[in-house]
Image (cartoon, rainbow, N blue to C red; front, side, top):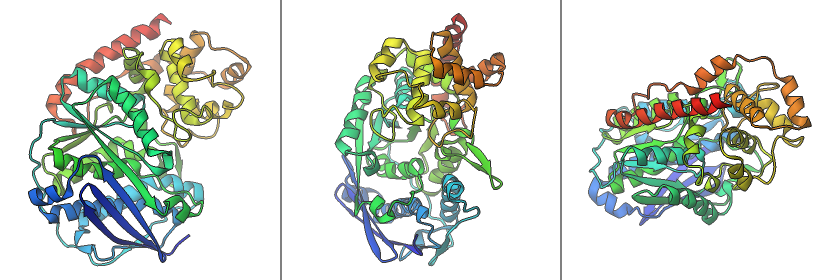
Length: 452
């Protein structure tokens, strides 16, 4: 545990942005290296003041993971002029919500660091991004949701580029980008943008084994802003599904949601902030937010040949076959995709004694939904039932099945196949193109399920 995090500073040169921190006298530099951003060119086009504001946002957001060290103070250092009332409200909201899981795990209800240093009394005016060749920048992590999001953009006739980044926590950077590149090969974007992240020293070593708070999704949005400015994108498109909106557990009077950064609330908050405070004509939205996983897995059926190139495991890429995330993705693929596709990705059926506890949590039999990016109990129940209809069997399957309470599958089916109205953050012309595709996918998935 530490007493103070100080925002030491930032430095831009060429295609590199360095973020510096002081943690009770220990210095750490986090380096973001872009494949095709020229900060000197951006400074000439938009002015150094805007780039300083963008750099500060990344500097402050990248400090949120260190709240896992329970500092009592976040010192703004020499950067208080960028900390407007709007930014402080944003930072506190993001930190509080992404930190709920950590507070639950460490039994620290109400924890929040104080922010020290001078503040700015007023916000700066947002700039207008000069339009480039491609309208949408699609975030791609290499999983099933990324594949479906890219597929929808392509089928809607949208010109889009992709943004992919590596993190030290996920292993070799080149391996991460290679795996993501395999998905992009299936739905080729008009441009591919990459970002590499390095720490000196490794921030996990600085943490000394303490859990770092995950704020990856909100941070990635701000990390993409230099790409948006450099190449003239007017939309930042994520692949976050409706299941990310529900909490894992209620504790100490608050909703603890492992996926809050992917939720509709986060999307609305971040979209409004970026447009009002930074880039006036850039929209932020998730193209998959109207959909539960049943329709997303249904959409994968049309891309079945590409599915084996996806990966989602955060323990060992592409799949460790022993974590809740692998268990959930396997369950969905086993329910909706042809068996040869699943067999090419996983060496065995994962519903075995080693993973039994994961499935009992996923299905709502015990404890709470795992703290992972997985669907809710209703989505898992429907997938499990489809697996049974498709012949999944065995002693562990029988034990799990016997422990399940009765369910109204008719109501569950209606909920899972319902296509919600898109968020107001989705531009009308995108909505007009993608909503009919989603509704047709829901109808096709219904027919597939009813045949079982």
